[in-house]
Length: 445
Image 1 (spheres, one colour):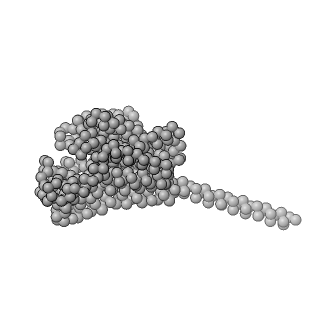
Image 2: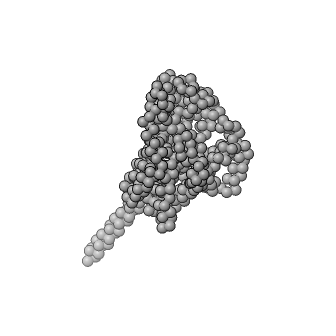
Image 3: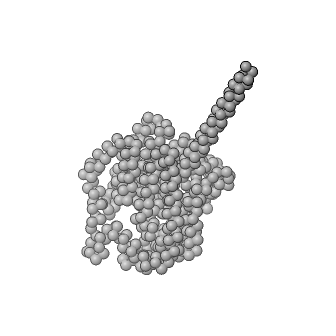
């Protein structure tokens, strides 16, 4: 299936071109997970069409680099290179090298989506087009979510939790947080010159996205969403605060939303008769891994090692004797050690630096991207964010676009400075010339 899918995608890329292929992936990838899951060769996460798409995206990036060597993408390499190198070196030390190598390819695809804007975003019109494509990718998941709600398919052991076309409500929640950020960026940047009907459509879509985020009941995403929403409201449009009037109605209509937060007050102790709540379970899981982390603090136990070894140190019974770390920080410390964690944090230090520099050029919507990145890192504290492939692609494309915008701002400032200096020299030359003519006239008199 992987070979067939890869060949088919190569033919599509050859026929349509790399730009159209990238646009198609961004538009459709958000609702392809159900199909890709069916195409896997085995239930353990084998290679299917999804893996073929990942490889095709990486191949497109490689082709862009080879065909256009003049594009300067060094900032992405500096940011992502150390982390990808550490993960690649950790593959031979993994208890499951094939799975570890697939994980490396997933991480490479994250970096690729930071890189692609350097080749396809050449102007604000291009950026607007791709942001609208990202936004359009949410329409099918949104319709699917409403269908699940209407038919009662969103009922779980935690009550109503929508997940749309994604494999888990948490993944869908993070995707919606990215979509909300994209909407706010489109509304905040006046130079996008959106039509009146488009702006109205975006304003109407905001409460839909907010409501679906609440219905995922993902606590960490709700915190990140609140940060993004309040930042937009106070910096760009305070009328957006009116959306908060809908919260009491939703709480009254669905009291289980409040229960999702209050259940953290119960089941906090392992020795109690109550089952551990989700956060207390995570705390116990993380604490149980600390002794193993201390044994190999610098380079860890190998990529994807946590789910392989967890049954040997976790005191509670686990389904299939395995579970993910539910924390990027713990996962990286366990699998690639402190070196890997530092390399991971280095990526986002570079991202924050780029966004801070954008503020120096008065690109105020970079505040929204800062809040999105903070929300991502907050989720990384308590969830398996490295496995959130699709929404991370969209976030990385937005961040890569910020790099492109920053480069354009720098180029524009340099060009303005050059033209200003040129005008000063021309004015000085004209003044000198006028003075010389006056001297000649005086001497003839």
